[in-house]
Image (tube, rainbow, N blue to C red; front, side):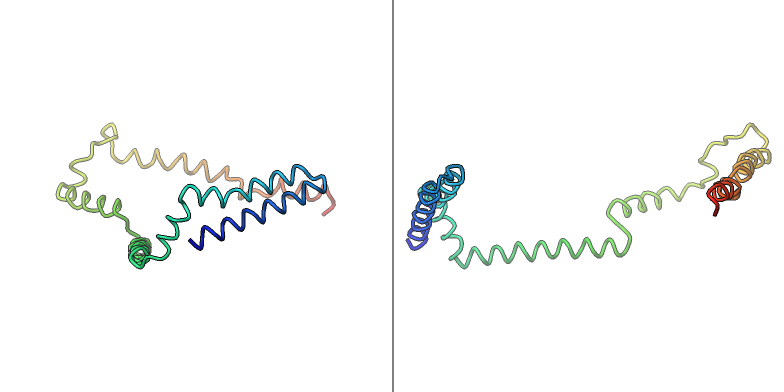
Length: 153
């Protein structure tokens, strides 16, 4: 009852301010103020104010909000512990699968990718890495020195 009276008074005051604004020839602003001032009256007439006041003054509703807050806090705590430990459900599931698959010898289950000469493969892999090291841009500063000399630095 009190909430409905307050909302009606706010609407009446807003419409008064809108009328004063319109008198000053600011019609766009007056229309906007009138629209805002009709919102509380509309909320009262639709029953939203009664619903909100019923929620706000019932202790069982506040106990329910408290339980929701506790549940959220428990969820966030478990997430923080999982992150700190560095494990998630997905990682634990993958670890369990790896433990089950560890019974089979890894060399026995993987196929050989070489053509029969096992010693030649590591040398072939080492050659491209050596070429990458030779052409690495981090070792050669001649370009930078030329730019600095060009600018007199």
